[in-house]
Image 1: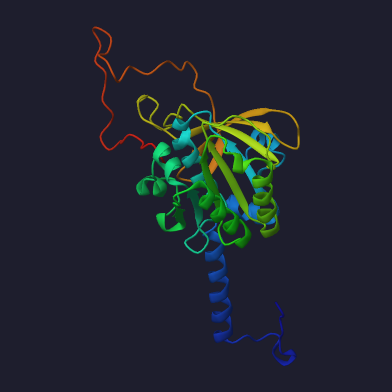
Image 2: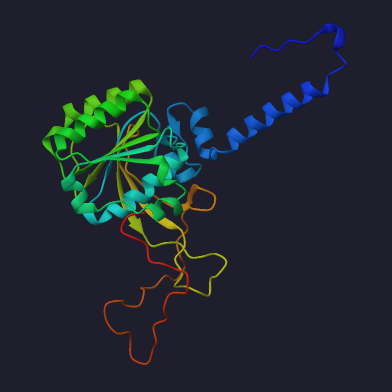
Length: 297
């Protein structure tokens, strides 16, 4: 931006000029404050989105890839809720907005296995429903075409292609096209596999994702039944670093960022919910206002 001044008025600035510059400054500050801290870090770090968690960033070689294809594998379809929560948080860090949304692509069969999204759950994770767009083609071939077009466009903050198992169309050749298009457009795209086995693809990095016991509410430690932050267990199965690395992250819904998950000392199994409690004990109910999580965040 070019800046000019009148030499004859170096020490004098009109009230109008001050107000105009102050208005511009306030607008710029407001724009920056709309972005989460990690989103600004992703902009500064080019092709890497740092989590700001030492263990996770070290295992991932600096952070989550911000350009190209990353594969996330679920050992079973029941892990779809954990994947939805993790990727919703990731989209927040990538700065998803209605203009540049999280774009989720899944064919009808895959969605029948994992279910649809729950709008209040997205809001609770910090992702406004208006910043979420879904493509639901009938067939896998159409889903793959939509993912390739989205990857090439660079119009989304994050693209997710969700599939069931290990379809032949998404082996080396199919994933290579996705990776090259996304890398050229400097766009992050995630291939999310339900109930999948490890296999060779063009994705430089593959993560195995699962849910872990939620954290406790720090201000109410005496109410052990309250559900705290969601926790995700992640194992780096494939990466340029060449070494498997496990770590855990929890999503802080208030600060809209991931943090290191601390294990609970003396953690014991929860009382049963599908049969009577032990004799002589009364199983407490959840506190008023606490609702059980839906299958998908």
